[in-house]
Amino acid sequence: MATTTVTPARTPVRASKGSTQPSRRRIFNHEMYELAFGTVYTGLVTNVLVVLCALPVVVLLLTTDPAASWPAIALVAPLCAPALVAAFEVFRAFSADGTVQPVRTFWRGYRTHWRRAAALGAMTTGLHVVVAVDVRAVWALPVGAVAIPFFVTLGVLGSLTALVAAVALPDHPTLRLRVLLRVALFAGVRRWYLTAPSLLVLGMLLSLVAAQPAVGLGLALAPLLFVAWGAARHALRSVLDAAPTASPAH
Image (tube, rainbow, N blue to C red; front, side):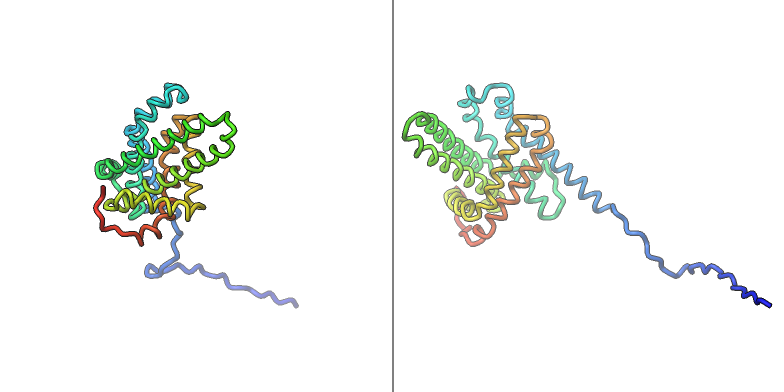
């Protein structure tokens, strides 16, 4: 006779109120939402403020032929430097704690660094005008084969120095501008693998603004400036930490 084995049914055991069950990990929490919203908000506000401060340059670039109106553009181009330094002030404050009041921080940085930033912009603009005029003068001459690479190298070094110096202004507001330029040149050349990509990012930004002004000025301005700022700041930090900072700013 075959025997039948009966397996008793298992009674489901309910977890008691005091027992803890592993809760599902939330992908998005309140802190991540605030960080994402704050990042987007800071970037959009920085875009608007930079465009407002550099409005004369933007209007000339978008409504005129730069090849014909370059004297007027060169005259108002130094106004962009304080706006860039103020944007770098916002980036510095945001990277420090993740939260920042972009409007207040921007205008505080603009007022604090306006004089030295404008002087830096004027020197950089003058250097590029001289380089462009010299290249144009020797373009069809035999000496151009030697002179043009020299002028182009001088312009690139000037751009590297100006970028690194503008990044350093918010971090070192009391450093003499002459010392700042010397240290910026040294850091830009020594850490060329960081500063050269920063220049390429700025070149991409200019190309994007020329091709699609709404996208370049409205969306891509702050993110690309942040990338250039981060690389240049990383290249500069080790050099400036050893530089004297007790001298008053001129």
